[in-house]
Length: 139
Image 1 (cartoon, rainbow, N blue to C red):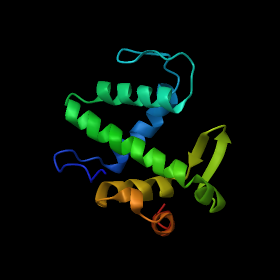
Image 2: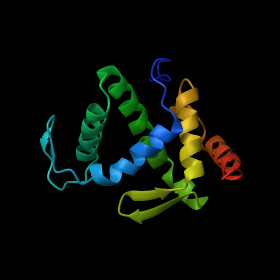
Image 3: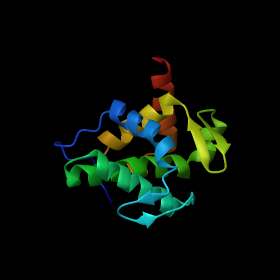
């Protein structure tokens, strides 16, 4: 599958965090220049189109945009696939339909795994929880 980002495209946590904050606005976009009218649909496909548009507009270098959008969406996918466990452990909360509130320590842990491990999708979520708990000690 995917490996970690090429060395020429660093993706620090602060940059990732800024992208998460931007998603509050991006989720509301009803039109994109690349994919056309999306309306108010909040499907996975529509939201992915919005994210791709956002990253394409954010970065001058197309390869960087593609690498970072892939990483960003992979992190979201990982959180979604393991949401039940993260919710049980109190690090995620379902706030509205398919929207979740994620504790910063968990975001930092998943981001760390996805920017340092060759095949992060295979990392046991229990290890991510351990890392999140360690990060929580420093918040």
